[in-house]
Length: 80
Length: 219
Ligand code: FES
Image (cartoon, chains in turn blue, orange):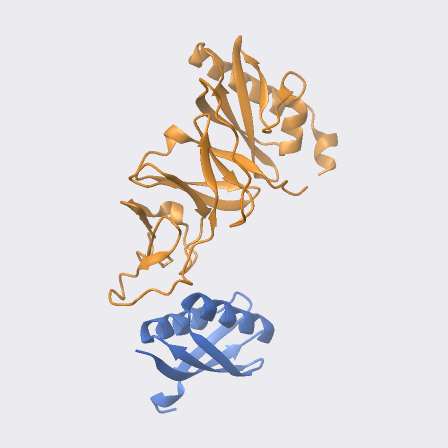
């Protein structure tokens, strides 16, 4: 089973660093992560894959690389 | 100074019993050395792909090593096979630990320093060789090699041949960090292991006592 979700991360980002972090985690988890927007305060990414792996991706990104600070993470279909 | 690609001794084989693991370093790269229950030794990057926990803190179960943190289990090829929090998940092949080539010779475990690449043949076995112990010196490999070459002869496999307490020995060097080196001592003939061990310690102490400022400044 695969699911497709739109994730949003809010915080303070080094865009290149966060983009590379997402690419690396997505590759490792064999899911697709298509970044729609990455700027200094917000990241929007469309993620598709096995639900357990999508959850792991979300957890990893909500910690993020050392030079980024994620303050809030949510999924778009969950009413926001 | 960078690390020359090749085979490096990283442990005395008998120190890593089946079902156990230990952490070591090769030029600052953290490695886990572990032995499965079938007796085969493995050398990997000491980092769980999940959250980076050291696998050397993990548990060996049969032919898997399981991470201490969340229990992800890896087979002998480094492939993740089980994630306890998601028992029904078909774990993707991309969840894999970075593995090195490992081999045993002369009673030591060797690792080839290039990740994943095809490795040349490992060091030849030492006939009647018996690994004795490992000693650590707070000096760069280059300084240790310079000291050793005063009384020992460098062999093709990178080891140093000579005698300690009148017994023929081979010493294999491991660049542990940029400033710390391990000496793995192998008895190459019959002799008193206790005396050789004591002579090895005296040798190590003499290295640390010798002036090295010029050598280290060149690092
Ligand atoms: S860090 Fe290894 S299983 Fe989580």
